[in-house]
Each structure stands twice: as structure tokens, then as C-alpha cells.
Amino acid sequence: MTIAPTSPAPTVVSAPMSRAAAIREAAVAKATEIAIALDDPATAWDAAPPGGGRVWPQSLAGGAAGVALLHIARARTGHGDWGTAHRWLAAAGRDPLTAADNAGLFIGVPALAFVTHAAAEATGRYHATLARLDKATITITRRRVTAARVRIGRGERPELKEFDLIRGLTGLGAYHLRRHPDHAVTAEVLAYLVRLTRPLPPDPNLPPWWTDAAPSGEPDPRFPHGHANVGVAHGIGSVLALLSLALLQGHPAPGLAEAVETVCDWTDRWRHDIGGLWWPGVVTPHPSPSPRPRPSWCYGIAGTGRAQQLAGLALGDATRRRRAEEGMIAAISDHTYLDMLGADIGLCHGTAGLLQAAWRMAHASANPLAAHLPLVTARLLTQLQGRIKDPELLDGVAGAALALHTTGTGTCPHPAWDRFLLLS
Image (cartoon, rainbow, N blue to C red):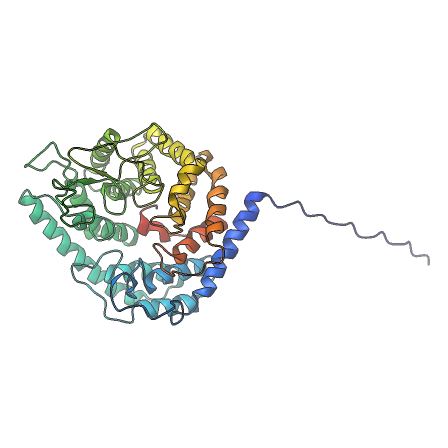
């Protein structure tokens, strides 16, 4: 029998990876590198963190709770290990949790509830712990709502910590709307925030979220008559985002649309369209020309632009939505403007926050923002070269890793980790 010679197997030549795909792959790799470096709660910090403040274990911003969120997000997409996530959750809850007046989305019982909820949804574990955390968080929230109602009844102006995202009822509402949107406490928080947008008797010409203190929340001679805070971390931007998200979720709380429109009308008065889209971080009774804030999440286009996009989507206002998206594209395309971020990598002040906001905005509607994501991703990767320090979530590498992981994998499973920034 004659056997015909076999032909050599054809050579398979892989198509070259696109630059965008290569950057996404590098983003996942860097996020993995950071997560590995932050594997052990006992060694993640160069020295044991102090027993208080931002690096308190139960702090979402700077403690073990925030790093746990990174490991939970990676485990949920199959890139990480649930054992590591559990170790960090245990570290976050190792000390008695605060339920005092300083407790909020970023610290104490509510912070642990937020992180535990993400793990419980994915694993089916932690439900007894989460139930206890929920009960305490609801108690904290109702205590704060009651105090706010008393303040409104007196006709007094609010402190920032009453309503803001970091310390106040907007942050607590962000958790409740995600965790149990149909619970009565969620409706109570939303009703309070709607009321926050309605005039107060002493001076109906000032917005009712005007505060008599400085942006720090403390008296300051530079702000003798107080200010209105426009940002997302401490200002009305977070209220706009949360009320818009409630509308988009179909929440039946009365007055949501009117409240969103009220805030939009006020922010429109302070919008700048020359030299890029931006809003001042704060408004004072006698405003001088304001510098354009850097494109950060806390006070810049990353946070305020996303809040405006959410408002446009919630109200069916295509003009508002497109303006926000085009403003973000213009910001990302302006290298000089991006340089205002300096060396900051974080979610609050830096490139990671800009990247995550841009990713969210790109996936919220049909717009060309996605084509600009590789530029911001590459910038963050460059900033992180040789840098696995500052483990914290809000300003450190844990937050940067989360933004890179999300962009690189193209997914952010529900319940989304970036709800604590009100980007989702």
C-alpha cells in the first residue's frame, strides 16, 4: 500500500493584538500584581496601621475594608481567591465596629455592611453577619434622618456631614438603594434628600444645601458666609447622582424628578463651557473667578460629569447627557488638563477615579467615550510603574487596581463596587 506524503501543517499566524487590547491585558496584569502584593492583611502595610483615623481597619477609604473590596471584586470575576477576600473581611471586622455619629458609608458598621453585601451576593455566605450589620445600619440611618428633620423644622442650614456622601445620608442612602431598594428606610432617606432641595425660610435665594462652614466642614475665615459645595464627595453632586439612580431604578419615592431638575437648574447656573466643561468646586456669596478643578472624582469632571450624565438619563434629557459625555471626552483629550492630576493615582483625587468614571459613562449610552479609555488606562499604568505602596482604596493602589481590573475585564458585576463613589 502506498502512503501519500502528508502536507506540513499550516502555520497559524495570530493577528497582532490591537493597542487597546494590549492595554486592557496590561491593566488586568497590573491589577493582579497589586492584588498579590496585598494578599496578606498582616504585611500589606509597611508598619501596623494606627488604631484610628483613615487607616482604621473598618475604614472603607483607608483600611482593610477597602482592600477587601478589591479582593471581592476580583474573586467575583474569577481572577481572585475567595480565601484572600475572607481574610481581609475578617481583618476589617476584627475590632468593635463604630455605630456612633461618625459612622457612615466610609467608616464603621455601614462600611462593613457595604463590603459584606458584595461578598454575600456572590457566595451565599455571610448572610447572618449581613443581617446584623443591616439592622445596625438602619438604626444609624433613621437616627440621622430624624436629626435632619429636626434641623429642617428649625429652619437651620445643614452641615455637610448631614447629607454628603462620605459622612452623611447620601452615603447611607447609596447603600440602602443598592441593598434593599424596597425597604422603608430607603424611602425615608430619599424623602429627606428631596426635602433638602426645597427652599429654607431664612433666605430662599440661597440653595437649601448651603452650609455656613468651609468645605472642610469647619468654620474658616476664608468662608465667612459659608458656601454651597458642588462636588460629589461632600456636595450636592452626590445628591444629584443618588436621586438620579433612584429614578433610573424606578423607585416610587415622590418628588424625585422635581428634585433632580432643581439641582440641575442650579448647577446649570454655575456651569462653564469655555475651555472645556466644568463646574466650580464651591460657590460663595461673592464668587471670584474660579480656577478649573482638576478632572478628579471628588470635585472635577469625573464626578460631576457622571452625575450630570445620570441626571440626563433619568430625566430623558438627551442634551444634558450628551453635554456631559462630550465634556468628559474633551477632558480626556486635553493632555495639559490631565497633567493637573499630577502623580495622584487614586479614585478620589487621581487618575483611577477619572478612569472609572469614564468607563461608566462610556457604557451608559451609545457614545464615543470607549475609544478614549486606553489613553487614561495607559496613563495610570505608567504612574504605577514600580509602585505597590499606599494600600488604601480611596487614594492608594487598591482603588487603582479596581479601576484597572474593571477596565481590563470590561465587567463590574452587580452589586457594583463603585456604588460607594455613586458612579453606579
